[in-house]
Image 1: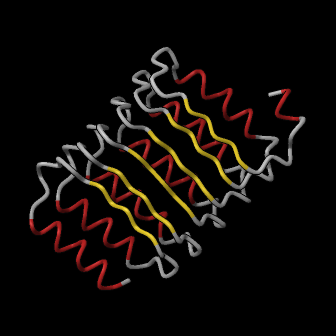
Image 2: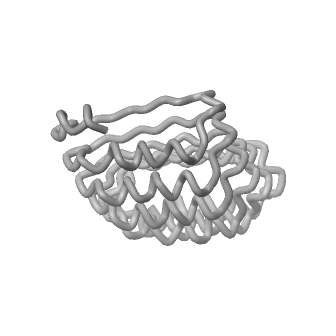
Amino acid sequence: RESLKLVPSLKTLSLDLSGCNKITDKGFDNIRNALIPLTSLQDFSLVLKGCKQITDKGLEDIKAGLILLPSLKELSLDLTGCNKITDESLDKIKNALLSLISLQYLSLDFEHCKQITDKGLDEFKNSLHLLPGLQDLFLNFNNCEKITDKGLDEIKNALVSLASLRHLSLYSNKCQQITDEGLDHIKNALVSL
């Protein structure tokens, strides 16, 4: 934290902690504290791919750090394979996004987060329509086995309100409960954009 005080004008910060299986929720308090002096940060990327000890509690600290970054234009969170992440984490991310009104690029990767459900997508969608400048959206829910057509309907409801959206990537491979009805929801969203 002391070293980051020396660069308060930092515009981009990327932290890739992929596969660091000994990182626990306790470590995220340090990340939150490191973000506090970075009020000029415009691009933040945090990759936690395969960090299996991370839970919703750790995302609470990330949320607390993100809400202090009003200048943030790009946010990327990769939680691939963080099996202890649940719908509660989507709610925390939603709450962080409510304060990031300058956000133009959002990438959220929940691949193999098997506890994410339609309920989480319902909560999460409520933040997207409050991001008027969002131009690029990447959502990865591959192998999130509890997502159904209803979840895609929630995503559709959020997408239709994103007037500035230019790029959309939506991944839901191997989501066994998605049917033709889910694809119809996405088609309807695309027609409305």
